[in-house]
Amino acid sequence: MNAALIANFQACVAHDDDLWILGDFAFGRADDNAQFESWFHSLPGRKHLIIGNHDDEAVISLPWASTEYMAEIQDGEHSLALCHYPMITWNGARRGALQLVGQTLLYKSGDGRGSPFPRRTYPTASVTGMPSAVYPFRTAMRTWSSAT
Image (cartoon, rainbow, N blue to C red; front, side):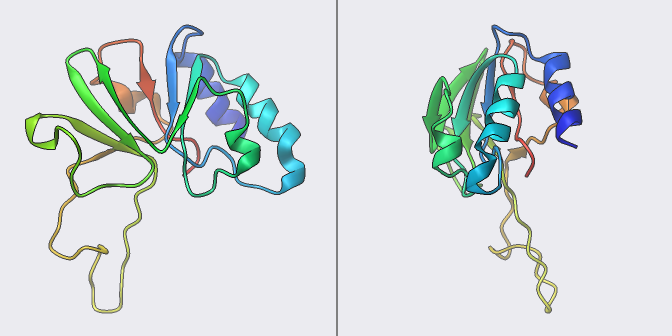
């Protein structure tokens, strides 16, 4: 699966593109650092990390162009709020800004509730490793999550 994800990135991300990883770049043991570095250097583009809950020091210390817990970027006319976790609201949410998240957990409890926040909807875009998911964005910036 890792090889397929890397191949998908290589097929559609150019070396001068900005690639935003929305957290959980890799999950493993401390002795997996060489594998993390191999995956990192196999990906094209200027790589930015939005730190996720599974990104430990081995991942954060890779030579990212930037590491943040949250970022606000502009993609053409689109304002984007990037975070590993979904937020109920974000800067510009009522003015058309989109939220892109790396991890969306839906809970199914015994009483049928499907969300940790009952009666709430999430106006977010959860972009996962498929290149077609970035179709609405016009510029060379491509954004999607690693393996979560």
